Length: 568
Ligand code: ATP
Ligand code: MG
Image (cartoon, rainbow, N blue to C red):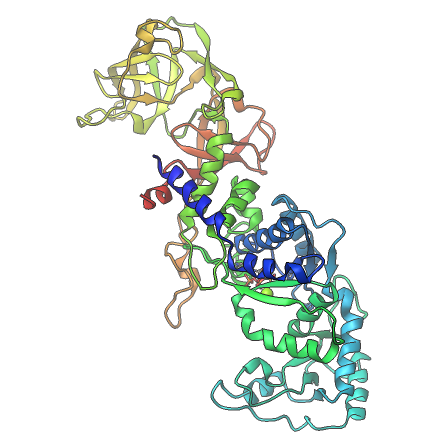
């Protein structure tokens, strides 16, 4: 049994038992008319593979239980957010294969409601305007073991608070001059309950509300209520929000009517990947400081980067399925992600022969001027895929690494006196090595056996030799550029840095290498996004930088599957 089969079996077993979120939802099913989840990105960057996990989870659960999943932009911070991000997020969710229909919402749609609720909290004596600076507030907050200090503005009257808050909204204060805080408990063991900030002043243009507001709710005063407004039944978050949950519940306790359905928040461990940074802030830094070419640089763990690299939506969804959901922090081997794309492309990608480091072979007994068209299976894994035409002639290119002059015994590729099969073609034998005056090999002279043509049905065509090489005909070779990628970071955990050091020090200086390549002509008309396998080399995808007549290929992943090996 192959390694991949072992994997499938494990998957099937896992499917039989419900994960903890499914268990919670199934227990709640009798009490709700419809399961409603949401994917709530903040539009302050492009989505990454961690978000993909959250998207698959939220949309997946809604599909599974006949419910609905909203796409909600948590756009409460106008200084960091942008419409470019909104558009990219929508494109990425769609590309992953999910559809939110008309359920596209924005926390900014609720700004008036949130403001009204803030006023309600003031009236109830549960919120106050505070004139401390942000630094003073954080200093006065104490530590988990030392209670914080109460603000001197904490006990002002409701009337005064209402007046000040209205003036905040009307633009009568400067940024940072005051803020609205919830009046909860400065001694709470949960730091988030120590009179958290609800509103701050920001004279910033908002991508949706323009200049209508100069006060903006904090994420914590918007997120839970937005879920509540939308009737979200299950608010699925990453673990870091577990400690925010009591605060979200406190707010809802003060604004919801008895009997109204409250969202049930449950937390799962965020996806971490080896050799990868996953924080949007760090990814933004990589983009802004030009360590990569952009958010969609094929080395980035962004969805747009993976797409450009050649990943398929199926492979990303499959990956999300395989990593599953857990309640404990963990780190996933990036080799699993690579395994998923390999597994998918093996089944679907057309095969192409491409030579990256050419060495010329002349078949001396093949008639000069003669050419012929040979047939290659488009994809041996797919019986329906058919055949492609591959021109053959007297002069060919093979990979330099497929030839050795002084070959050790176990070298089954081409060497003097040795035979190999040219894939889809003939068996050739190396007769002579031609060198220039400096002793560099310039070409290899071979002879071929005309009876050994692949698929010709002759006895000689069945003859087995140890090595099979890919090749490209000189007369019909297509020139292209290939971008070879290595991991962007050299260490498993790039964020693990000593004091005074920076994750950027772990950047791999050799993560991109651009090389010329020669291809069989079957891909001459390939368009950006076209994925194929370069036989014996790996999977490649045509980049959007390609122009007519000059193809650029990104290497998606090599053929060697280290993850399947780990599973042995
Ligand atoms: P980052 O920390 O990478 O900057 P974020 O949490 O600030 O991301 P949001 O836009 O707030 O980004 O995230 C939208 C949703 O995606 C949230 O529900 C969040 O919990 C989830 N999410 C973010 N990162 C991951 C991850 N690594 N694994 C799983 N889910 C994630
Ligand atoms: Mg966030």
